[in-house]
Amino acid sequence: MLYYTLVFLLIALVAGFFGFAGAAGLAATIAKVLFVLFIILFIASLIMGRRPRV
Image 1 (cartoon, helix red, strand yellow):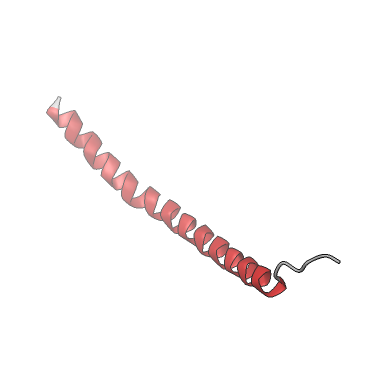
Image 2 (cartoon, rainbow, N blue to C red):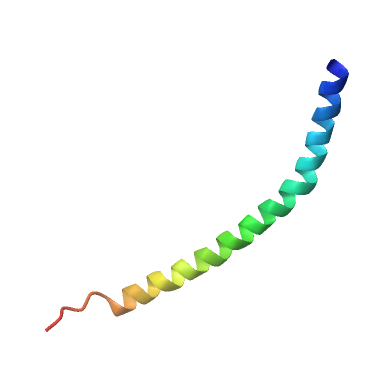
């Protein structure tokens, strides 16, 4: 039983190394894009301001 535990642990570590590295990289790229988008929208809202309607 300990043998199977160690085998599955090794498989999980290898799968995590190869699989999650790509997923983490993709998530980081998406986060960077969204960060830049929201910074642009924030600056635009500061420039436009809340002008009172007449």
